[in-house]
Length: 146
Image (cartoon, rainbow, N blue to C red; front, side, top):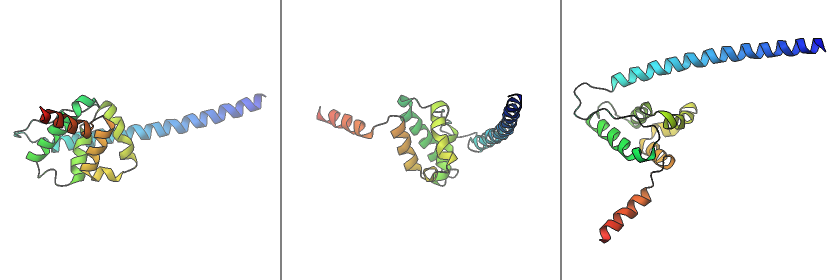
């Protein structure tokens, strides 16, 4: 019985050591990503831009239209910095926080093709965070009826 407990304790200590090493590696990766994000944000924030830098988006559905307009406007006046869909999506993801940031992590982890398709990325955001284009179209038709 004592020998079994010693073996179990040894196995637990080995697992703890492996998990500690993995945790340290993940923390280092996180530190590098945070530094890279800060570098990218400095690169896309020109000092004399006529359109203010967009606010972050935390997943609150009511703020999604505002977020999309802000980011699209910013990218439009800085089109030389956002020359392809991947750059546009990277910019959007750099502004995600909270629930929205948690939502995008799996796409990044699996290097999803959607990260290189701005329209598809926006459509996915709209679907996830509750923007229904059909409802918007219905509202327009109702207004036209009056």
